[in-house]
Amino acid sequence: MQPSTFNPWTWRDPSALAGGYAPASPDAAPPERPEGTGGGPDAPGPGTPVDLVGYRVEAVDGRIGSIDEASDDTDDRWLVVDTGPWIFGRKVLLPVGTVTRVDHLDRTVHVDRTREQVKESPPFDPDGYRKPDYRDRVGDYYRETYRRG
Image 1 (cartoon, rainbow, N blue to C red):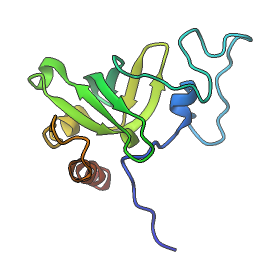
Image 2: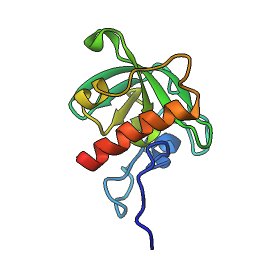
Image 3: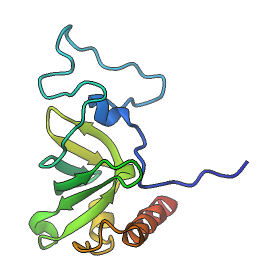
């Protein structure tokens, strides 16, 4: 059996987008919701396409920025995040594998990287970010951040 390799381009928990709930553990029950609310007025139902553009993005140690663009292509899922003034208005490309949960009521995407790790990521290439070789470079950077901890 070969060891599994972390793929930063795949969702770790697809239910995070489908219903806005990511369990704390595999055995955890979803939170109680009043009958008929379906998770609130902004929570999409399972299988509903979700447009994350405009959602805030929070790292483990604070706000990163907001989503400028997102892709939900089967194998090429990513978020373009406009970081605003904290790193001179730079945009970054985040693989969706960095997403830990999505809160649709607060319109916030939580990622498992620190602000410093995002700041040190490869420069965003507005002309090449859709190309596999660029995404490989970004994916390699985030894969290494998981190895280093």
